[in-house]
Length: 297
Ligand code: CLF
Ligand code: SF4
Image (cartoon, rainbow, N blue to C red; front, side):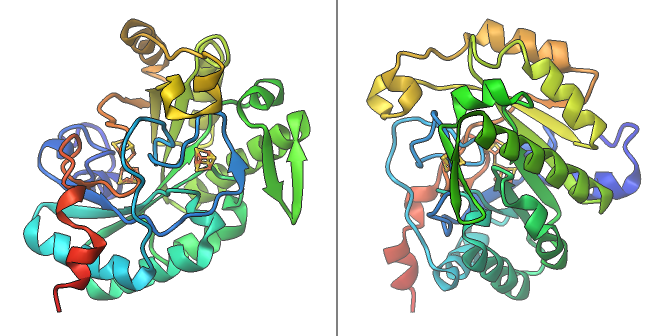
């Protein structure tokens, strides 16, 4: 229920399946995979999963043009009436593909004005796009922040591409962290609801995520979603190949418990694909292929 949330915030979360645990039983989200490029390299990436920016075995997400994406949204909205949210979350970074991302939001807002717009980003380009995000009436933004310590960041991110240049190591991680926190603050100052996703990586950032929780809370994050690293060598991620393990369910819960109280902690994330469709945990993406949508004329 509404609890002690202000009415304006409640209006934004009550039918968003990720922002409200209750809502996820009743409302559906969909992602359109319009964003192939990325400006960061994460050691856990395989470009198949997103928002979670996670790595699990699966089929590569279909890449759509903005025009194909809006047709897909309309087709899904017709067959899934509980659809309330359209997210752009990959398979790369939406803000590294700004033309496609904002064109898609614009077309969807025109064709289906009741659908809420959601965006997930690594945050590197975020300060440059806060105006565009506000103008596009995106209500919800997720930023993946795995650390606020550049020495830890250097173990997670081999490089970033920023201002036409490649940066590596601690220098890269410091730029990324500064941009993520700055972008978060800019968004929350404008009243845009922000969630922070963090991937829990044992022995790398697991102890440190309590600090991240404090840092993002103090900058106005509404929700903190701590997700387990899913790491296995067959997924082809750098961590997977290096034998980096993911946390156990007990380790994850202990960390979530340690953060609860500082900020709302999300515990129902399903680490969605970049082209996920349906209720969380119910993947209907296979019913809505590009071929099928294009054949609907
Ligand atoms: Fe998608 Fe992400 Fe928006 Fe939700 S997913 S862009 S906030 S509409 Fe949700 Fe999926 Fe977890 Fe993401 S369950 S991976 S938190
Ligand atoms: Fe992969 Fe996302 Fe990291 Fe880019 S930001 S490298 S798409 S996990």
